[in-house]
Length: 287
Length: 260
Image (cartoon, rainbow over all chains, first blue to last red; front, side, top):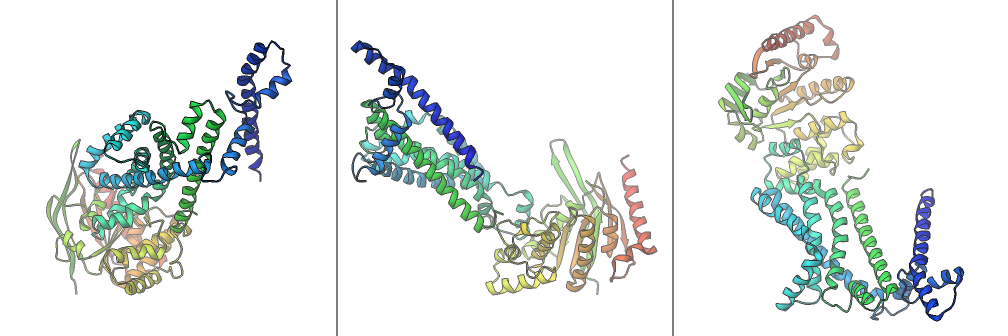
């Protein structure tokens, strides 16, 4: 309960700043309208107008909240206006991409830890891959895959995987190398095979590192899935909502989609956190 | 009957480093017989740990001949000739105490029933009955080190190699563990190689004390202990004990004068 006060304080501060910024940014339109009609507006009228414009520069918090509520609860979830529907489309691509990316990351990490050749040859490419802006590479992936007949969820998942494999790779390489020399020597005194050391020592040691990476990875995966929906002119998914919102100046729609994405990301990270807690507690690694 | 278990003939070990070769061991001649409790004592860099690691085939001598149970150390390791106890307990935090003791048994492919049986037996040997289901962090440092000794005993190797196993523990705990180790040694009749830098510990535990000195790492004195095998803690106040301790100290000093 003691934590509640600081949380509410920060939340309150954000709302105050947000409302202030909404008044400041949206009042120009109000003044322009008034000037065109040749009338004066009082400050109170300006403030109330900035709170309820159709296409505000910055929607006020209650407008976004209403947009979110409308998008989530105001429609049947199969409707094209439902944020649940669009969220699901993005989520499914995120999850598939996350699974692919995590698999690839772990696979490459195991290879890198066990083979010096892979360490030298794969790691630089993995790092280089992350220096390329995802916005530049996403359209190419989609075009190339479409030309060989792959469309739908898979191209989006590939881009999501492209972003999420890297944190998993880096975390797992570090985790699999976490055992110290003494622990490795101990297994040598038992004449343990490489696979024995992997299953008994390296893999369990890497678990805390893996979960930290997974949290970064799943958020990156969501970003990848949303970005992948932009260039294709997709008609569904949170990325598509962002895109069509910006086409038609529907700022409330954009902000609602943004918040939906943020809530989704937070939820996914929390789910991973929960699995982490349960797993590490089962392993006896949480006191 | 005196049976040699570990035989070193003119063993040398040189590490190649960026600053040129480092002679960790040179001309080491030593025979350890079945049932011996041999301590290696000396300042850091004298090669005592390196020699123990060479016996365990964790390092390979570059000169001379070293045999364990009549085999080369690598073959002896594969034949599970020894259990090794490190300075830190090094228990896996994700395994219970029983799970940790079971680790070598799983790797060596013992049957489930046999694993349980052996875990029970060695945990009682180190006085840790009833702690099998605890996780390492729930135990004190001394208890963790006892669990690691149980782990080294679990597969019933004849030789126990211990590299400063109590070095990180406080003196009171150390005294108790020393006493328990002697009882364990009497009960199991193992051959023990024990690295330490504590003179009282070496004298109290050993039937033979090997004094070593650095640069190059070599043996300067081997002291046969006249103390009886049965040793209460207060034997450390006896004249005999102090005399051996004095001789060890002299040996260490002589080795040290070399490089000063």
